[in-house]
Length: 394
Ligand SMILES: *Cc1c(COP(=O)(O)O)cnc(C)c1O
Image (cartoon, rainbow, N blue to C red; front, side, top):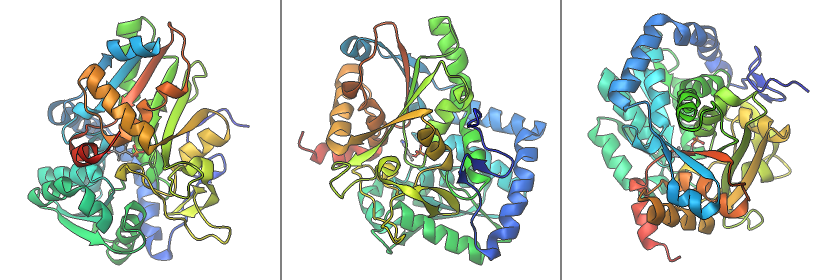
């Protein structure tokens, strides 16, 4: 078994990944594959990307020692504060990078899919900033439960298209975005919001999010005197905040990786989005990965209280990390995530996004030693979830 958990030159992480796409998109994806590394590594891209991350997004995001939470769980817990980014989550690290890439590739029209609306807002934001046309596909169910984000996207000048197929959530929005891209391959760049889709998207998004672990490295050195934690913890929907959190430590075996996927009402309840535990190998949205499907290959509708984790697939990097044992994956149910959200709010005065609350939900499940250092990616803030929090009976 390979000890390198990064993508290989064919776009695979172990047996997962690749680019399974309709013929009409072949030229686009091939072009992207040939250009992305050149562009991302160019000096002018790097200069503009990092200037915007600093002055527009507000990076570096703080690494905060959560004293009261640490005391409660008997270990040293740090929160990587992606919730403090402009637009309220880690998503903007990726959209800033991809809009700069789209400009350099001569594209004039941007499309995106969104679940919780955070990626849609982050995309609409950079399109306003760069004066580009923006169309966001969003499941009708999500439009209803994340209305504030819909209003933000519209105010930013984006057109939000409600999608009524399937159970009208993220998977269905992604299908529609791919359909649009097939009709408009020449002028349109598709900004995928997570480490999913055909190669090179998972690797490109992971690289753009890797700023998270690059910062953790020097920040933890300042605080703990060593440049690595014992554990990294993140939630996984498609896997982008988790990929960014672990990127610099992928091949550093001193660092253990613990990921929280959405258990929904319970892994065996039939209402779950615990893709890594319930999934089998198949192809979804252009990648070979683990996905929730029936024995004859129909995709199973996922369920989670959290719109951002409500996806039947998982990025190929994470399928490989889980299947090789590099990561430990725990399914956190709706009620556990809710309890963790209220706990963080009452102990630290930070209202987390429901997705991030799944990552915090691992603490009652695991035992840590007093001297162990745990960094949790707090992927987003809870503003968008206030309705759900208010209406929830603990
Ligand atoms: C979108 C989102 C997620 C899930 O997406 P990943 O690609 O798995 O990171 C997690 N947290 C927040 C706050 C989000 O907006």
